[in-house]
Length: 116
Length: 116
DNA sequence: TATAGTAGTTTCCTAAAGGAAAGTAAGATA
DNA sequence: TATCTTACTTTCCTTTAGGAAACTACTATA
Image (tube, rainbow over all chains, first blue to last red; front, side, top):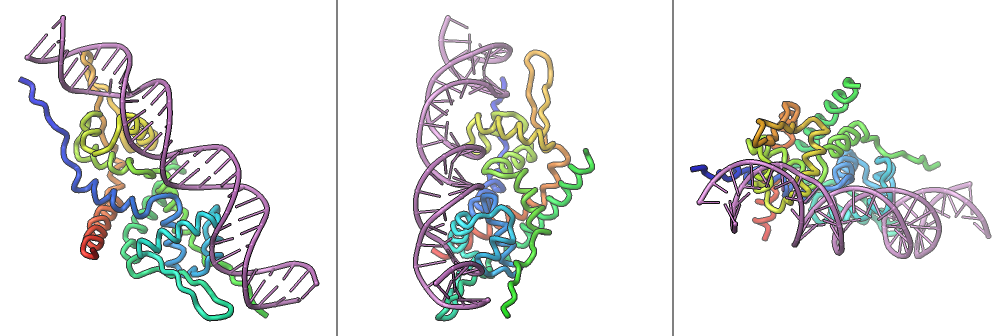
């Protein structure tokens, strides 16, 4: 008789990948982390370093990145106050991921370009 | 006089990362690639291997992954026909990315868990 | 004949993401 | 005094993602 075979189990990989996606989802979080990590610490500089990023979206994303302990918001000085955004050490753990994404993107663009 | 400093340039990294995100965006694409790569080649098996994945979403994502040359859809046999989904060799280039995501997710879960 | 499996499609709906534009409150600068 | 800069917020709107449920057409099996 035919044996009903269940699907192969891939949850060992799928679950942690989904945990990661829950943190860095969307178009903007990784670009913002990259920009801040490279040294852009002012709201306006971060915004201007990433084409298409609007202040509304940036403010929302920065709040979420703060909650995940990836970015730190610091108020500096008295009058005038400065707001500085800096990358937490924990954000450095994303470096291998960011480079894997960068490398794949570079390769993919070459592939698509040469295919035309 | 005060010199207006422009933001530091991070486009060399941000642009390719965004190219990558355009291909593997959303909750489901990487999980589907993982499931197919591991050997789940039937529609129903892929669906059942990923909790929460509905047939409508799976059908749509598979079409997009086909367009990006990551997954191949093959019709096998005459009557009854079988539909097989397999990973293209190009999907293997995502392996470093998938492992970077898996590793980060495992570590993140440990961090969150131990922090409670 | 009835039920189950395969590979989806269709409809309806909600929530979240994202974008455009303008506004705001503070101090700084000309 | 008027304009500029900074760091946002607010409103309005559209698009996309995603989920629930039912349905379809075909074959297989009990």
